[in-house]
Length: 98
Image (cartoon, rainbow, N blue to C red; front, side, top):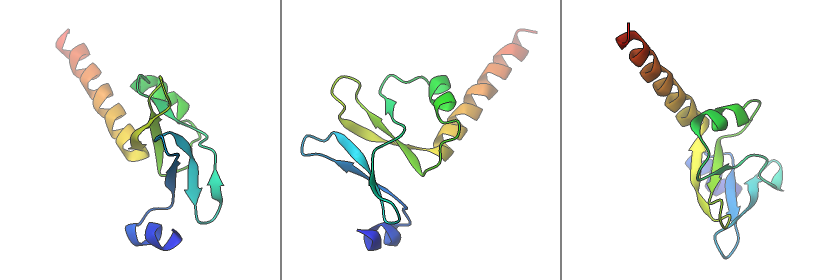
C-alpha cells in the first residue's frame, strides 16, 4: 500500500468497512489510526473551519450523519479556498449596501 500511495503522491488513505463506513486512516509511517476529524454531510463551512483549527493532514473525510457512510474527502486547500470565497462574497454584499 505504501508504494501505491507514494506513486499517487498521497500520504494517507481512508479505510472503509464492507458497508462503506469509515474505519480509520492509514499512513505508511503510522499504520492505521482512527479518524480524529470528520465532517458530516450537514457540517457548515464556518463549523468546518473552526474544527480544522490545529488539524494536520491531507484531507478530512466526510461521512453521512445518518449511517456513517463515507462520502468523500475535503482537502485543506479546498476548505481555505471556499472560506476565502465566502468572505469575499460577504465583503461585496457589505460594500454594495454602502
